[in-house]
Image (cartoon, one colour):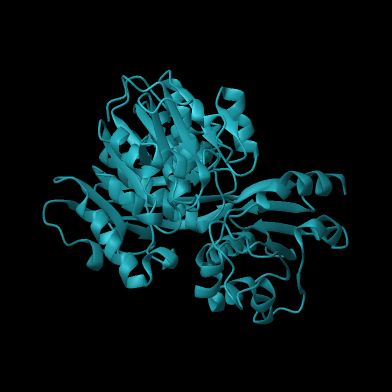
Length: 456
Protein backbone atom coordinates (compact mmCIF):
# COMPACT_ATOMS: atom_id res chain seq x y z
CA UNK A 1 0.00 0.00 0.00
CA UNK A 2 1.63 3.24 -1.15
CA UNK A 3 1.20 5.86 1.59
CA UNK A 4 3.27 8.75 0.25
CA UNK A 5 0.30 10.37 -1.47
CA UNK A 6 -2.14 9.68 1.40
CA UNK A 7 -2.88 12.77 3.47
CA UNK A 8 -5.92 11.64 5.46
CA UNK A 9 -6.89 8.25 6.90
CA UNK A 10 -10.59 7.97 7.75
CA UNK A 11 -11.82 5.22 10.10
CA UNK A 12 -15.43 4.05 9.99
CA UNK A 13 -15.80 2.57 13.48
CA UNK A 14 -12.79 4.36 14.98
CA UNK A 15 -13.83 3.58 18.57
CA UNK A 16 -13.23 -0.16 18.20
CA UNK A 17 -10.21 -1.45 20.05
CA UNK A 18 -8.41 -2.72 16.93
CA UNK A 19 -9.39 0.29 14.84
CA UNK A 20 -8.19 2.75 17.47
CA UNK A 21 -4.72 1.17 17.52
CA UNK A 22 -4.45 1.66 13.75
CA UNK A 23 -5.74 5.23 14.08
CA UNK A 24 -3.04 5.96 16.65
CA UNK A 25 -0.43 4.37 14.38
CA UNK A 26 -1.30 6.58 11.40
CA UNK A 27 -1.23 9.64 13.65
CA UNK A 28 2.44 8.81 14.39
CA UNK A 29 3.02 8.64 10.63
CA UNK A 30 2.07 12.32 10.28
CA UNK A 31 -1.28 11.60 8.65
CA UNK A 32 -4.47 13.52 9.39
CA UNK A 33 -6.70 10.97 11.12
CA UNK A 34 -10.48 11.34 11.08
CA UNK A 35 -13.17 8.90 12.05
CA UNK A 36 -16.77 8.04 12.79
CA UNK A 37 -18.30 6.01 15.59
CA UNK A 38 -21.84 5.47 16.78
CA UNK A 39 -21.37 6.68 20.36
CA UNK A 40 -18.71 8.47 22.43
CA UNK A 41 -16.70 6.42 24.93
CA UNK A 42 -13.69 6.79 27.20
CA UNK A 43 -11.55 5.51 24.33
CA UNK A 44 -12.91 7.97 21.74
CA UNK A 45 -12.38 10.76 24.29
CA UNK A 46 -8.72 9.73 24.52
CA UNK A 47 -8.40 9.61 20.74
CA UNK A 48 -9.80 13.11 20.42
CA UNK A 49 -7.36 14.36 23.05
CA UNK A 50 -4.53 12.83 21.01
CA UNK A 51 -5.57 14.79 17.90
CA UNK A 52 -8.01 12.55 16.02
CA UNK A 53 -11.21 14.19 14.70
CA UNK A 54 -14.26 12.05 15.41
CA UNK A 55 -17.93 12.44 14.45
CA UNK A 56 -20.78 10.54 16.10
CA UNK A 57 -23.40 10.74 13.38
CA UNK A 58 -23.24 9.42 9.85
CA UNK A 59 -23.81 12.86 8.31
CA UNK A 60 -21.86 13.36 5.07
CA UNK A 61 -21.11 17.08 5.46
CA UNK A 62 -17.53 16.70 6.64
CA UNK A 63 -16.51 13.67 4.59
CA UNK A 64 -17.69 15.33 1.37
CA UNK A 65 -14.69 17.63 1.86
CA UNK A 66 -12.27 14.70 1.52
CA UNK A 67 -10.26 14.15 -1.65
CA UNK A 68 -10.57 10.55 -2.79
CA UNK A 69 -7.06 10.62 -4.28
CA UNK A 70 -5.37 11.49 -0.99
CA UNK A 71 -7.67 9.65 1.45
CA UNK A 72 -7.52 6.07 2.69
CA UNK A 73 -10.71 4.67 4.22
CA UNK A 74 -10.38 1.92 6.84
CA UNK A 75 -13.52 0.15 8.03
CA UNK A 76 -14.52 -2.66 10.35
CA UNK A 77 -17.02 -5.40 9.48
CA UNK A 78 -18.69 -4.63 12.82
CA UNK A 79 -20.22 -1.53 11.17
CA UNK A 80 -23.54 -2.60 9.70
CA UNK A 81 -24.10 -2.61 5.96
CA UNK A 82 -26.14 0.37 4.83
CA UNK A 83 -24.04 2.83 6.80
CA UNK A 84 -24.35 6.16 4.95
CA UNK A 85 -20.64 6.90 5.14
CA UNK A 86 -19.55 3.51 3.83
CA UNK A 87 -22.05 3.83 0.98
CA UNK A 88 -20.69 7.30 0.14
CA UNK A 89 -17.06 6.19 0.09
CA UNK A 90 -17.83 3.13 -2.02
CA UNK A 91 -19.99 4.96 -4.57
CA UNK A 92 -17.40 7.73 -4.95
CA UNK A 93 -14.43 5.50 -5.64
CA UNK A 94 -12.38 5.96 -2.44
CA UNK A 95 -9.64 3.46 -1.58
CA UNK A 96 -11.21 1.24 1.08
CA UNK A 97 -9.53 -1.43 3.19
CA UNK A 98 -10.76 -3.60 6.02
CA UNK A 99 -8.96 -3.15 9.33
CA UNK A 100 -7.47 -6.64 9.02
CA UNK A 101 -6.06 -5.91 5.56
CA UNK A 102 -4.25 -2.80 6.81
CA UNK A 103 -2.90 -4.68 9.83
CA UNK A 104 -1.63 -7.44 7.55
CA UNK A 105 0.14 -4.96 5.29
CA UNK A 106 1.83 -3.18 8.20
CA UNK A 107 2.93 -6.45 9.82
CA UNK A 108 4.54 -7.73 6.62
CA UNK A 109 7.60 -5.54 7.22
CA UNK A 110 8.44 -7.35 10.50
CA UNK A 111 8.84 -10.77 12.07
CA UNK A 112 5.26 -11.28 13.19
CA UNK A 113 4.27 -12.88 16.50
CA UNK A 114 0.51 -13.49 16.31
CA UNK A 115 -1.77 -14.68 19.12
CA UNK A 116 -4.97 -16.43 18.02
CA UNK A 117 -7.67 -18.36 19.86
CA UNK A 118 -11.29 -17.90 20.84
CA UNK A 119 -10.23 -16.96 24.40
CA UNK A 120 -7.11 -15.55 25.98
CA UNK A 121 -5.55 -13.79 23.02
CA UNK A 122 -5.78 -10.23 24.38
CA UNK A 123 -4.18 -11.00 27.74
CA UNK A 124 -1.59 -13.24 26.07
CA UNK A 125 -0.61 -10.67 23.44
CA UNK A 126 -0.37 -7.91 26.07
CA UNK A 127 1.78 -10.12 28.31
CA UNK A 128 3.97 -11.05 25.35
CA UNK A 129 4.48 -7.39 24.45
CA UNK A 130 5.28 -6.54 28.07
CA UNK A 131 7.80 -9.38 28.49
CA UNK A 132 9.63 -8.64 25.24
CA UNK A 133 9.62 -4.87 25.70
CA UNK A 134 10.89 -5.23 29.28
CA UNK A 135 13.64 -7.52 28.01
CA UNK A 136 14.87 -4.98 25.44
CA UNK A 137 13.49 -6.96 22.50
CA UNK A 138 12.43 -4.16 20.14
CA UNK A 139 8.78 -4.60 19.20
CA UNK A 140 5.82 -2.89 17.70
CA UNK A 141 2.52 -4.15 19.10
CA UNK A 142 -1.12 -3.75 18.06
CA UNK A 143 -3.11 -5.04 21.01
CA UNK A 144 -6.76 -6.06 21.42
CA UNK A 145 -7.13 -4.27 24.75
CA UNK A 146 -5.71 -1.37 26.72
CA UNK A 147 -2.55 -2.69 28.37
CA UNK A 148 -2.10 -1.27 31.87
CA UNK A 149 1.66 -1.46 31.42
CA UNK A 150 1.64 0.72 28.30
CA UNK A 151 -1.62 2.59 29.02
CA UNK A 152 -2.42 1.98 25.37
CA UNK A 153 -3.26 -0.63 22.76
CA UNK A 154 -0.30 0.48 20.62
CA UNK A 155 3.43 0.05 21.24
CA UNK A 156 5.97 1.48 18.79
CA UNK A 157 9.79 1.36 18.75
CA UNK A 158 11.92 2.99 16.05
CA UNK A 159 14.19 -0.06 15.77
CA UNK A 160 11.49 -2.73 16.05
CA UNK A 161 12.21 -6.13 14.48
CA UNK A 162 9.16 -7.92 15.85
CA UNK A 163 5.46 -7.23 15.45
CA UNK A 164 3.16 -8.50 18.22
CA UNK A 165 -0.53 -8.68 17.38
CA UNK A 166 -3.77 -10.31 18.32
CA UNK A 167 -4.99 -12.51 15.46
CA UNK A 168 -8.78 -12.13 15.47
CA UNK A 169 -10.88 -14.95 14.02
CA UNK A 170 -13.97 -12.73 13.66
CA UNK A 171 -14.79 -12.28 9.96
CA UNK A 172 -11.71 -14.43 9.21
CA UNK A 173 -9.54 -11.37 9.90
CA UNK A 174 -6.54 -13.44 11.01
CA UNK A 175 -6.11 -14.82 7.50
CA UNK A 176 -4.60 -11.46 6.50
CA UNK A 177 -1.54 -12.22 8.65
CA UNK A 178 1.52 -14.31 7.76
CA UNK A 179 3.14 -14.91 11.15
CA UNK A 180 6.63 -16.19 11.89
CA UNK A 181 5.41 -17.49 15.25
CA UNK A 182 1.75 -18.11 16.06
CA UNK A 183 0.07 -19.03 19.32
CA UNK A 184 -3.36 -20.70 19.26
CA UNK A 185 -4.74 -20.62 22.78
CA UNK A 186 -8.17 -22.21 22.40
CA UNK A 187 -10.60 -23.67 19.89
CA UNK A 188 -13.91 -23.44 21.71
CA UNK A 189 -16.76 -22.78 19.31
CA UNK A 190 -17.54 -19.09 18.85
CA UNK A 191 -18.60 -16.62 16.16
CA UNK A 192 -21.00 -19.16 14.70
CA UNK A 193 -22.81 -16.21 13.13
CA UNK A 194 -19.76 -16.08 10.83
CA UNK A 195 -18.78 -19.73 10.56
CA UNK A 196 -22.07 -21.57 10.88
CA UNK A 197 -20.60 -24.66 12.56
CA UNK A 198 -17.69 -25.44 14.93
CA UNK A 199 -16.11 -27.59 12.21
CA UNK A 200 -16.09 -24.68 9.79
CA UNK A 201 -14.47 -22.49 12.43
CA UNK A 202 -11.72 -25.08 12.95
CA UNK A 203 -11.14 -25.26 9.20
CA UNK A 204 -10.41 -21.55 9.26
CA UNK A 205 -7.94 -22.04 12.11
CA UNK A 206 -6.27 -24.64 9.89
CA UNK A 207 -6.15 -22.00 7.16
CA UNK A 208 -4.47 -19.69 9.68
CA UNK A 209 -1.84 -22.36 10.35
CA UNK A 210 -1.25 -22.52 6.59
CA UNK A 211 -0.42 -18.79 6.74
CA UNK A 212 2.56 -19.38 9.06
CA UNK A 213 5.76 -18.75 7.12
CA UNK A 214 7.84 -21.81 6.14
CA UNK A 215 10.34 -22.45 8.91
CA UNK A 216 8.04 -20.72 11.40
CA UNK A 217 6.59 -21.99 14.66
CA UNK A 218 3.14 -22.89 15.96
CA UNK A 219 2.64 -22.90 19.74
CA UNK A 220 -0.57 -24.56 20.85
CA UNK A 221 -2.25 -26.96 23.25
CA UNK A 222 -1.47 -30.68 23.18
CA UNK A 223 -5.16 -31.46 22.56
CA UNK A 224 -5.17 -29.27 19.42
CA UNK A 225 -1.96 -30.63 17.92
CA UNK A 226 -3.61 -33.52 16.03
CA UNK A 227 -5.89 -31.00 14.28
CA UNK A 228 -3.35 -28.24 13.67
CA UNK A 229 0.09 -29.85 13.27
CA UNK A 230 -0.31 -30.98 9.66
CA UNK A 231 2.66 -29.09 8.16
CA UNK A 232 6.15 -30.54 7.90
CA UNK A 233 7.83 -27.20 7.23
CA UNK A 234 7.01 -25.56 10.59
CA UNK A 235 7.92 -26.37 14.17
CA UNK A 236 5.01 -27.28 16.48
CA UNK A 237 5.44 -26.68 20.22
CA UNK A 238 2.87 -27.63 22.86
CA UNK A 239 2.23 -25.91 26.18
CA UNK A 240 -0.10 -26.30 29.14
CA UNK A 241 -0.56 -26.93 32.86
CA UNK A 242 0.73 -29.95 34.77
CA UNK A 243 0.80 -32.25 31.75
CA UNK A 244 3.13 -33.74 29.17
CA UNK A 245 3.50 -30.64 26.99
CA UNK A 246 6.95 -29.40 25.99
CA UNK A 247 6.41 -26.25 28.05
CA UNK A 248 4.33 -26.94 31.12
CA UNK A 249 3.67 -25.27 34.49
CA UNK A 250 4.05 -27.31 37.68
CA UNK A 251 3.93 -26.62 41.43
CA UNK A 252 1.14 -24.07 40.91
CA UNK A 253 -0.02 -22.36 44.11
CA UNK A 254 -1.66 -19.12 45.20
CA UNK A 255 0.25 -16.90 47.64
CA UNK A 256 -0.62 -13.28 48.44
CA UNK A 257 -3.20 -13.17 45.61
CA UNK A 258 -0.55 -14.18 43.04
CA UNK A 259 0.09 -17.45 41.27
CA UNK A 260 3.51 -18.98 41.85
CA UNK A 261 4.75 -21.82 39.65
CA UNK A 262 7.64 -23.54 37.88
CA UNK A 263 7.84 -24.15 34.14
CA UNK A 264 9.54 -27.15 32.57
CA UNK A 265 11.02 -26.49 29.10
CA UNK A 266 12.78 -28.79 26.62
CA UNK A 267 16.10 -27.44 27.93
CA UNK A 268 15.50 -27.28 31.66
CA UNK A 269 13.27 -25.45 34.13
CA UNK A 270 12.34 -21.96 35.25
CA UNK A 271 11.65 -22.03 38.99
CA UNK A 272 9.76 -19.77 41.37
CA UNK A 273 7.94 -17.72 38.76
CA UNK A 274 5.12 -15.45 39.86
CA UNK A 275 2.44 -13.82 37.74
CA UNK A 276 1.10 -10.42 38.65
CA UNK A 277 -2.37 -11.33 37.40
CA UNK A 278 -5.01 -13.57 39.02
CA UNK A 279 -6.43 -16.67 37.38
CA UNK A 280 -5.17 -20.17 36.68
CA UNK A 281 -6.09 -19.67 33.02
CA UNK A 282 -3.65 -16.77 32.95
CA UNK A 283 -0.87 -19.06 34.16
CA UNK A 284 -1.71 -21.15 31.10
CA UNK A 285 -1.48 -18.04 28.88
CA UNK A 286 1.84 -17.14 30.52
CA UNK A 287 3.34 -20.53 29.61
CA UNK A 288 2.79 -19.82 25.90
CA UNK A 289 4.54 -16.46 26.33
CA UNK A 290 7.41 -18.17 28.15
CA UNK A 291 7.79 -20.51 25.16
CA UNK A 292 8.24 -17.53 22.78
CA UNK A 293 10.54 -15.73 25.22
CA UNK A 294 12.66 -18.86 25.43
CA UNK A 295 12.81 -19.17 21.64
CA UNK A 296 13.90 -15.52 21.35
CA UNK A 297 16.62 -15.86 23.98
CA UNK A 298 15.10 -13.78 26.80
CA UNK A 299 17.17 -14.17 29.97
CA UNK A 300 15.56 -15.95 32.94
CA UNK A 301 16.06 -13.01 35.32
CA UNK A 302 14.34 -10.61 32.93
CA UNK A 303 11.52 -13.08 32.29
CA UNK A 304 10.87 -13.51 36.01
CA UNK A 305 10.80 -9.78 36.63
CA UNK A 306 8.45 -8.97 33.75
CA UNK A 307 5.98 -11.76 34.59
CA UNK A 308 5.82 -10.54 38.17
CA UNK A 309 5.35 -6.88 37.19
CA UNK A 310 2.63 -7.49 34.58
CA UNK A 311 -0.34 -5.27 35.45
CA UNK A 312 -2.83 -6.83 33.07
CA UNK A 313 -5.40 -5.43 30.67
CA UNK A 314 -8.38 -3.19 31.20
CA UNK A 315 -11.55 -5.31 31.50
CA UNK A 316 -9.65 -8.60 31.89
CA UNK A 317 -10.13 -9.69 35.52
CA UNK A 318 -9.75 -6.01 36.30
CA UNK A 319 -9.88 -5.50 40.09
CA UNK A 320 -11.52 -2.11 40.50
CA UNK A 321 -11.92 -2.10 44.28
CA UNK A 322 -10.78 -4.25 47.21
CA UNK A 323 -10.80 -3.01 50.77
CA UNK A 324 -10.59 -6.45 52.35
CA UNK A 325 -14.33 -6.62 52.97
CA UNK A 326 -15.80 -5.78 49.57
CA UNK A 327 -14.31 -6.58 46.16
CA UNK A 328 -15.35 -5.34 42.73
CA UNK A 329 -13.97 -6.97 39.57
CA UNK A 330 -14.79 -6.13 35.94
CA UNK A 331 -14.24 -8.64 33.13
CA UNK A 332 -14.83 -8.81 29.37
CA UNK A 333 -16.02 -12.44 29.50
CA UNK A 334 -18.79 -12.96 26.96
CA UNK A 335 -18.56 -16.71 26.21
CA UNK A 336 -19.50 -19.51 28.64
CA UNK A 337 -15.91 -20.81 28.80
CA UNK A 338 -14.66 -17.33 29.68
CA UNK A 339 -17.29 -16.96 32.39
CA UNK A 340 -16.26 -20.35 33.79
CA UNK A 341 -12.62 -19.28 33.97
CA UNK A 342 -13.51 -15.94 35.53
CA UNK A 343 -15.78 -17.43 38.21
CA UNK A 344 -13.20 -20.13 39.00
CA UNK A 345 -10.55 -17.45 39.55
CA UNK A 346 -12.87 -15.50 41.86
CA UNK A 347 -13.63 -18.63 43.88
CA UNK A 348 -9.91 -19.45 44.22
CA UNK A 349 -9.00 -15.96 45.42
CA UNK A 350 -12.08 -15.29 47.58
CA UNK A 351 -13.34 -18.76 48.56
CA UNK A 352 -15.57 -17.74 51.47
CA UNK A 353 -17.29 -14.71 49.98
CA UNK A 354 -20.69 -14.43 48.31
CA UNK A 355 -20.36 -13.76 44.58
CA UNK A 356 -22.84 -11.38 42.95
CA UNK A 357 -22.55 -11.13 39.16
CA UNK A 358 -24.00 -8.68 36.65
CA UNK A 359 -23.95 -10.13 33.14
CA UNK A 360 -24.82 -8.46 29.86
CA UNK A 361 -25.18 -11.07 27.06
CA UNK A 362 -23.47 -10.04 23.81
CA UNK A 363 -25.20 -10.85 20.49
CA UNK A 364 -28.52 -12.59 19.99
CA UNK A 365 -26.86 -15.33 17.93
CA UNK A 366 -24.26 -16.13 20.60
CA UNK A 367 -26.96 -16.18 23.31
CA UNK A 368 -29.01 -18.58 21.19
CA UNK A 369 -26.12 -20.82 20.13
CA UNK A 370 -24.81 -21.28 23.69
CA UNK A 371 -28.00 -20.90 25.73
CA UNK A 372 -27.47 -24.11 27.73
CA UNK A 373 -23.80 -23.36 28.32
CA UNK A 374 -24.56 -19.81 29.47
CA UNK A 375 -27.20 -21.11 31.89
CA UNK A 376 -24.72 -23.60 33.33
CA UNK A 377 -21.86 -21.11 33.70
CA UNK A 378 -24.06 -18.41 35.26
CA UNK A 379 -25.54 -20.90 37.72
CA UNK A 380 -22.13 -21.02 39.44
CA UNK A 381 -22.55 -17.57 41.04
CA UNK A 382 -24.53 -16.93 44.23
CA UNK A 383 -26.59 -14.01 42.95
CA UNK A 384 -27.20 -12.86 39.37
CA UNK A 385 -28.42 -9.65 37.78
CA UNK A 386 -29.00 -10.19 34.07
CA UNK A 387 -29.13 -7.20 31.70
CA UNK A 388 -30.83 -7.23 28.31
CA UNK A 389 -28.86 -8.60 25.36
CA UNK A 390 -26.43 -6.15 23.76
CA UNK A 391 -27.20 -6.42 20.02
CA UNK A 392 -23.95 -4.98 18.57
CA UNK A 393 -24.29 -5.58 14.83
CA UNK A 394 -27.38 -7.84 15.02
CA UNK A 395 -31.14 -7.51 14.80
CA UNK A 396 -33.27 -9.31 17.44
CA UNK A 397 -33.98 -13.02 17.04
CA UNK A 398 -37.45 -14.20 18.01
CA UNK A 399 -37.49 -15.96 21.36
CA UNK A 400 -33.91 -15.02 22.27
CA UNK A 401 -34.12 -12.78 25.34
CA UNK A 402 -32.47 -12.41 28.72
CA UNK A 403 -35.75 -13.42 30.38
CA UNK A 404 -35.76 -16.74 28.51
CA UNK A 405 -32.10 -17.29 29.43
CA UNK A 406 -32.92 -16.60 33.09
CA UNK A 407 -35.48 -19.43 33.19
CA UNK A 408 -32.74 -22.06 32.74
CA UNK A 409 -30.36 -20.63 35.35
CA UNK A 410 -30.69 -22.82 38.44
CA UNK A 411 -29.76 -20.47 41.29
CA UNK A 412 -32.50 -18.94 43.45
CA UNK A 413 -31.28 -15.34 43.60
CA UNK A 414 -31.61 -14.15 40.01
CA UNK A 415 -33.35 -11.33 38.15
CA UNK A 416 -33.46 -9.39 34.89
CA UNK A 417 -32.81 -5.68 35.18
CA UNK A 418 -32.98 -2.76 32.77
CA UNK A 419 -29.75 -0.79 32.48
CA UNK A 420 -31.37 2.40 33.72
CA UNK A 421 -32.44 0.56 36.89
CA UNK A 422 -29.12 -1.15 37.59
CA UNK A 423 -27.62 1.29 40.09
CA UNK A 424 -30.84 1.41 42.15
CA UNK A 425 -31.02 -2.39 42.08
CA UNK A 426 -27.42 -2.68 43.30
CA UNK A 427 -28.04 -0.37 46.23
CA UNK A 428 -30.42 -2.95 47.68
CA UNK A 429 -27.82 -5.73 47.59
CA UNK A 430 -25.41 -6.90 50.28
CA UNK A 431 -22.17 -7.05 48.31
CA UNK A 432 -19.13 -9.14 49.20
CA UNK A 433 -17.63 -9.81 45.77
CA UNK A 434 -19.23 -8.06 42.78
CA UNK A 435 -18.42 -9.08 39.22
CA UNK A 436 -19.48 -7.24 36.04
CA UNK A 437 -19.09 -9.34 32.91
CA UNK A 438 -19.85 -8.81 29.23
CA UNK A 439 -18.51 -7.34 25.99
CA UNK A 440 -21.20 -4.75 25.24
CA UNK A 441 -21.62 -1.36 26.89
CA UNK A 442 -21.63 -2.72 30.45
CA UNK A 443 -18.23 -1.06 30.80
CA UNK A 444 -20.05 2.28 31.09
CA UNK A 445 -21.13 1.21 34.58
CA UNK A 446 -17.63 0.47 35.85
CA UNK A 447 -16.87 3.95 37.13
CA UNK A 448 -20.34 4.54 38.69
CA UNK A 449 -20.17 1.15 40.43
CA UNK A 450 -16.60 1.79 41.61
CA UNK A 451 -17.61 5.17 43.02
CA UNK A 452 -20.68 3.70 44.73
CA UNK A 453 -18.96 0.70 46.28
CA UNK A 454 -16.00 2.74 47.53
CA UNK A 455 -18.39 5.12 49.31
CA UNK A 456 -20.50 2.39 50.88
